[in-house]
Amino acid sequence: MNLTHSTMRGSVKIVAVGNLDLIARGRPAEFRHRGLTLATRPTAMAALLEVGRDPDSIVLVPTNLNDMPLTEFVDILHSLAHVPVIAGIVPGCSAQAVSELFDHGISSTVALPTSPGRLADAVRASRTPEQTEELVIEVGNLTLDDARHRVTWFEKEVTLAPKNFEILRFMLVAHPRVIPLQELMKHVGDNPQNRAVRARVAIGRLRAAFSDAEPRHDTPIETVHRIGYRLRL
Image 1: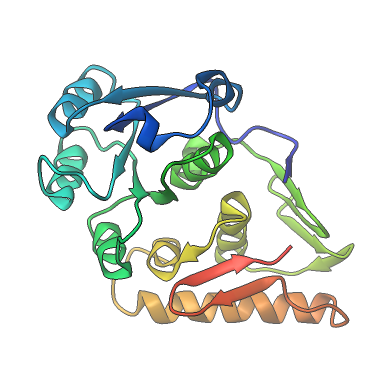
Image 2: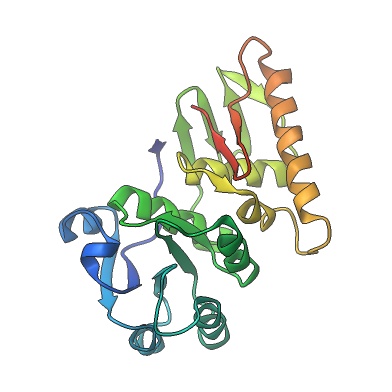
């Protein structure tokens, strides 16, 4: 992925709950190179205290948190500080558990132990549009120019409505990870009714727009059975 402008301003502090060796794979300098500073805390309560001191942090919490129910921890974070929460997915975590976490307002997910690149992608996915800068993203033959609201696919213009443009932008920032349907649903509107249907409709419209722009090539949006979607680039 080539981003001509950074999606994050300065260094981002990640308050991670648990043992660093089980959370991160890589040297601290590699994370700093990605604009990330890791601050590990042994318990959920210690992480809450740290966030209280630095409310601009992002919290990374493993799905096997053992000192309090994970959904309760997420709810407390949102009520106290409204900070983004990234769920660190550990082996054995069910899709239903991840879906419940999205219902409680987590911002994104990442598999643990995480690499600097994967964590940076999860941080970008957790950021709201107000927290990001205008950017140009180039992945393979797909280019999105945020400032000009322009998408090209094999150098052909792809015409997108504003909401579908926003969804594609989110998918590009998250690339190459699979985006669960529950996560995509957060980007189709505030009304919780029929969000799953609207998310699927948005994906269908994106695919149609790519086919209209360049019918000689398959759509870059791939369905991952029973999980969600990813870009095939």
